[in-house]
Image (cartoon, rainbow, N blue to C red; front, side):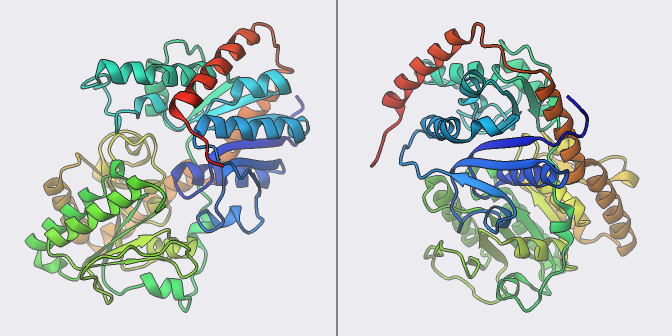
Length: 467
């Protein structure tokens, strides 16, 4: 196809809430839009009170269904059918991420190319957080039989994509090794961020800003409230630091992230973190932005004024920027192990913050740990005592060392992980997909029939309908 031809692109994403995958989709769409392409996002769920600002304020065109179907694959197919029956013909190419079920249907019935962005194979997360070289351990035969249809569906539909992208070399390597039928060479396109959104001025009089602002030195963690994100590591390391280093008595910890009361994992995680704070005799408070529809759960003995730990549920863009930019913020703590990429470290680096992360997965690609004169952060095994020692080093950095590290971190983030870099990489891939021409439907009926048959079985076996 002709170079610089503006494309009409449809993004398909399951749930456009608040999270790393959602941030990537939003920034990818913004980046492609800034290059002159037309972008529409189709999603099965979009709560305007639990989403990123750009999907709510009209910056991006978002189309969503009001589906009562519980089964995620069925929700996506329902959305895909709506898209195919109404506006699919107007797009040049489809960009799909997270859930691959719709891919063969888009190719078969629309005759258009599909690019799939792989965050990480779901089949490798079914038994909890993925740990490389430990696949299959402690997995029962019954669990394997139970998962087999879902795993087959994921692999069969993923391999139908015309081009497959991965968010890191780690994800590309693991996906390739665990999808035996995959013949594609996965291309790595690192998630990029909208740098301007992290460096924009803050209104200090904003009530939401006043909620989180403090003169106390701050350690910051940005993650959804999920068990696999292991925010307990931050609390345990923080407790050790406070007990062993008297000079850190004025340091506070802010744990901020997406929280959905509909999800049991979110509720259990927050409760367990509160209990951990209480166990370590750390004062705490739980807050939400002023416009949030999520009410603060009831916990005993919350400290309203300057707690040791502040739990911030569903932070706003302004609150995030305030915390990342504040002169009092000392470091960003990124606690998940074996994270597929992890946008958190990049967010910290673009704001010049030292980052402390686990020495596995995507952060080993985004953060430079060695040599010390090139360092943008620290990579350590997820052990509280080890992290506490690293935090002590970070808290006691000289002003000269802190400024030098800050500059290195910002330079690396701008060069490798800016939205412009991601958008240009995606543009090249989407143009390549379109240049392949119309999709050949030869041999696709067999795959389509198998996928449809399996979906019917899965919906009635694992899914349910309400309304």
